Length: 344
Image (cartoon, rainbow, N blue to C red):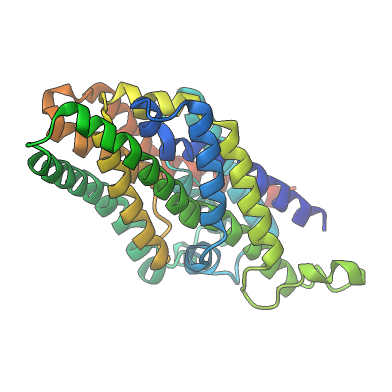
């Protein structure tokens, strides 16, 4: 029971950190274009992250039972995975790097599962889960963000050529509020689901192991004989994501919204609309996408069309390095934690 409490607490802390770490992605552009003040943008993002988190469950199922063999997983394995992801989240947040909370969690889970399986790589569901839903989207989603963001920006440039800059600024100053809200909602449909999947996995494995057989009647809601998202888990994760969002992610807002490329409302609208569309589609198909990758590359695509020389490629280079290290680094941390726990 103590292990379960630790898992839930660690997962909630991770979800909270995800809120202030990744949710900054949803509002960085609307803040940088000065359409909304940071306070108003964060309040809006918190609300729409909450609404997004309450919908769907495909991503949670992928995280909970689609990536690793659940027969090997224990609650200690899950705890190691969450702590590993949280540690990487905090490190990259402190450095102001928009790395991926999603890949940190997936890496931590795979590393911990590998430790539980004593180095047997078959514990990872490569063909059914990792390749089609993690590795391939990790490559294609940033490319899609860059290409579609650039394409949408180009089409907007062509369509808006007859209009004055004042009209364009005024129009997209309003439209960007809607695109930012959609971006926040889509973020909730994908990112909040991941922690739901982790907590449900802990409940499922604990139930299979008989850890909840002797609980008092008022705790029977913890029993999860089949992998299905309990309503209390959905509500808890949704609220935590919203609270974390309200805490803000100022370092990452500054990196995405100011330091990569200077944005106008029309640019912010194009980037947010592109990212929201990609993330929403991924959520529908149960793909635990990196929302950070998508919004960042969408901004890059928009910025490249706006003025290729205006892109600050040194910042982009730092972000790419953070992306490349996230999966293996969090995996190593998860592996080390799980091995250490097994040795106790």
